Length: 385
Ligand code: NDP
Ligand code: GDR
Image (cartoon, rainbow, N blue to C red; front, side, top):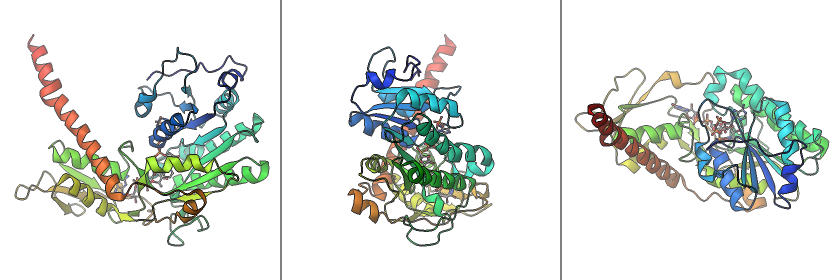
């Protein structure tokens, strides 16, 4: 997908005026997992969707390419703007041009382990980024016009103080990522109370899908096991197998993000399934879908190849994936969302694992085909020519 910034004539009113009565949403993090599902949802609801994408040396819009519209066509439904949550002038200009009815702040350095490597960057983007957007709303005088959704996280509960976790459970963040998101949580509450902005925190527990980034544990597992099944990979190395998470499907959870902004009064919600599984159980469920026998290997144990006697795949522990401070267990109580918003997740754990495994198997087959009989065969023949 190519990108463009031709959304305004420079006076900040063109976009809003041209779109007439249709609702406009602005999504930060539109190129991410949730951004892609939310874009689909909002386009289906008739919104004009504006998204902020980062400049990168290679195209980074794969997840939303299917919604692409030629920038030379008038009255598009999806418009991308270059930008970054670390750049306030850029954010102010985009908010001024678009005058969105709703802002969904999904953009973040979202990897917990990486936040220990890049703590300052994570604080800037995940924490101060939310403040920059809220200030942009104020500076543009849109306090009564623009609703704001903040992508909060179950990581705020970190070292858990209560089981299950609900919106009143005390926070105890355990990573630079979670501490940054704690700031974003409270600045969202503060701007709601101080300036009357319709601003909400969605405290979302882990949600996954075939569009999940490849280095989060669920996708890492489904991708690796699919490749092992097809002989493309030898072993899956993981960190803490005993960590427990409340895993839902991203498609279900973006609906909740939208619902939160359609209420009479803004408030914060916990979004979860109320079911908990360990990393180990996730691996076992994925192996069951693939009908793949597996053998566990402890830290430092030999784990290369597939067991020649049983054909079992090896899943081994590698301490490099341990975190300096771990979040051992998370389990959400979504009853408030059920009661007030009538929302219930529709995808079970088994359905989620199956969908992810099947998509990764397709991708692994495609790679195998293009590298084997396809691309490599083509290369060989063209080399001989
Ligand atoms: P992803 O990592 O898939 O997507 C993150 C998005 O943020 C990408 O579009 C990324 O752009 C963008 N981004 C990263 N840095 C910046 C920056 N400096 N400026 C602007 N945009 C930036 O995350 P998810 O879709 O899974 O999550 C969406 C949000 O929800 C995140 O804020 C995450 O922290 C939060 N969250 C996620 C949960 C989950 O389980 N998925 C649970 C709870 C909260 P690029 O594509 O260029 O990298
Ligand atoms: P999390 O997701 O940290 O909960 O953050 P992740 O999938 O990275 O980890 C979940 C648990 O699995 C353990 N784990 C491993 N994790 C990764 N990534 N890689 C491994 O090899 C591995 N082995 C074990 C982790 O230690 C952890 O306990 C996600 C992100 O989407 C955040 O942005 C979001 O806020 C939270 O979910 C809710």
